[in-house]
Length: 150
Image (cartoon, rainbow, N blue to C red):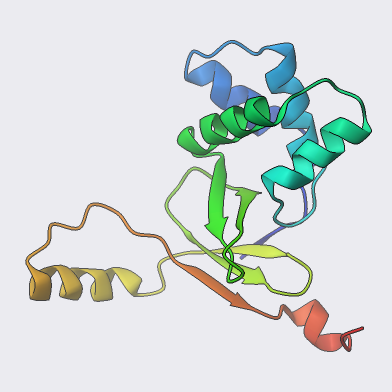
């Protein structure tokens, strides 16, 4: 298991841009830095607010385009939170699932753990040729469970 408490550096994001042949613009670098500084999952609104507070001159649409690009490059994944809000988390490009703490936002990547057997059974029963899937589980992480809610 791997907790995502923040990337600490922009290298995975920058490398993904380079490998895919995208230019590393000043704006993309700034968004990558905002992402790298986050702990746990974050929303686009979090980045928009942070960019505004720092007076970076990066607009909302630009941040959304950068988030979409990083998600397309599989170094950022969009999570659908139970609140209906969308959040993002930096992650490895390999197929995996997420376990998300509802209290602190800590995110852990989880491998298959037998889920592929269930997916194959669903494909067989429905006749669908399932191309991909994703799973997000929400709960309270060990650290938050050890600390009473405030």
